[in-house]
Length: 251
Image (cartoon, rainbow, N blue to C red; front, side, top):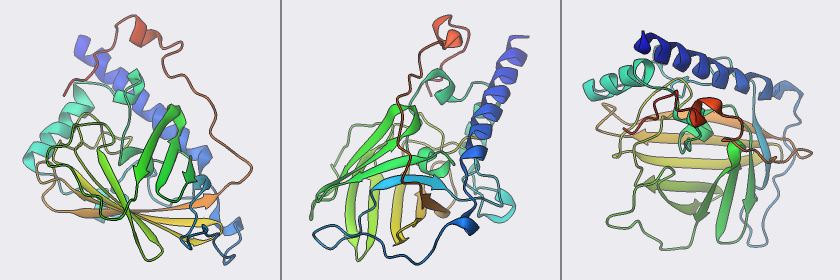
């Protein structure tokens, strides 16, 4: 009986999180195209702004939306982890655990970018943020402290911002429908502001413990200049968390 209740709650919470994305998608056919992208004083494209996902023809909550049959190349360990996520626990975000990367950029939820000369900040709904340096010559630590967003290092390749990340703690999911990752995850993200109103995004997922080969997920966002990130308190009124009714995943 207890297992049934946990599974039912997990399915309900996952459905609710996926449903949150739908009204936040934009119809890109109505967005102007071709207006020049703004640039910083140093000549690099300025990614600053409030960004929302464009209308998707495939499931917005599935990071494997571009793969055949939406099927991710899971290893046996990855299959077991997915089964565990879907049957034995609940979505970590449902109990206010940070969603991390790549989940936040895989979902349809909007975000805001603030860019400086040597750092860039991504501010997400649920009051999470990423602060990423792109100092020339910066390298990864030999043994980075595991974290939800990992150890992130940015660099410019022409007009494309590249973010290289390792050091994940393995406690998050990579999308809203439960796909897993391990502490061996390595991601390469590429952001290109193709014009004033669009950012094209490609993330390469490499996790030999969970997936049989590296693979890509592609997104496009549109500018929504009159909006901004609002305050959000995840813990407030979360009765399931306070009353201890939901098992918090520990991985």
